[in-house]
Length: 402
Image 1 (cartoon, rainbow, N blue to C red):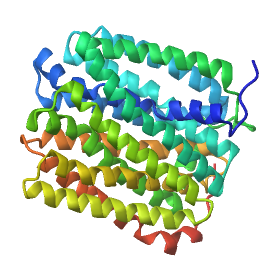
Image 2 (image 1 turned 135 degrees about the horizontal axis):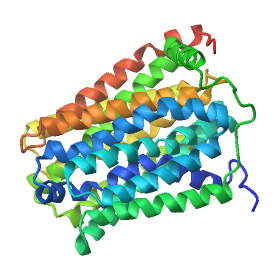
Image 3 (image 1 turned 30 degrees about the vertical axis):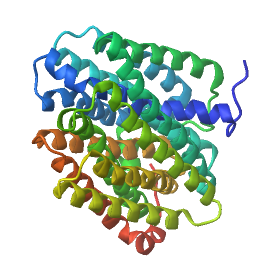
Image 4 (image 1 turned 180 degrees about the vertical axis):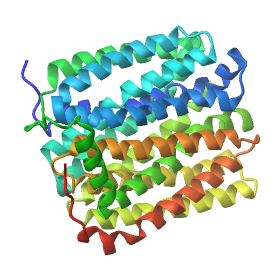
């Protein structure tokens, strides 16, 4: 069967699903976190490690996956990663202790990185500039469906089965994606880099990414905005279920609402990015993060209820729909001949920020929404601060690749 055409709807949906592997692997487990703490007799911080180690494994493996895809091509790495992801999911399902679950979650995160890393690289292989930002916005729309569907699916599985069933489902999804990639996705890399896996070129390419102010600044924006977003993703299940008495089945509607907000934000950004400079849209998004984060902190400190706390979170996630696609496209643009390596470095920034923020929120959890709210507010403000030097520095750098 012939591979789908780049830019087609099936192409976008397939890459969107691959890009959403991180969100899927996390969001589907969120309703199970309180039950998991009881079943395995651990605290909230230990249960949350099943998410943080997923992100840490995800972050570390990207340092290999990106350069390896520059050497061997995108599709072979995708197939290997998806197969290993399925096996790790089955390992999680068979786990009977928190230590075993944490180990397999780390392995699952290492395998899952092929989806987002190579999804971004495939877009960059085919497109650049505003068109790349537009395609990344479309992927974000597909990705945003995940928080709508995944927690609802997780909640319904918990209604009739236990938390092990969630990981059986993730293993099956990995095998399905393996089959879809094998049949429908073509190879996008036109020129392979024979020395891409040598230590010297890897170090030079990553050093070039970090030395370039456009890459570095936008990578920090991605890191801080994702860390703020993940503070909500990781902390809100305990706030909703334990503080406000929401059931695991009811909880799925909250990520669903934020998923819709992200879809709307990314869709509007995708429409506007062909009419306005992506940098201007990124700035608008950063100000939305600042304003909604500050509002969330104030409402929480004043003792607001669940609805009052959730409203600014919707605005925050709407702003993410403007920030992530434009910051990602700008960070990758200067790395014309090493997009796999560049995507890896960007992913490391993103996942380390998310993993540390998620762990911190739950380590500081005190039975209230305050740690989550204050972390979101501080990181949102830092993301705007990180972007304040963009116009002054981005144009001056030139990237030298190994």
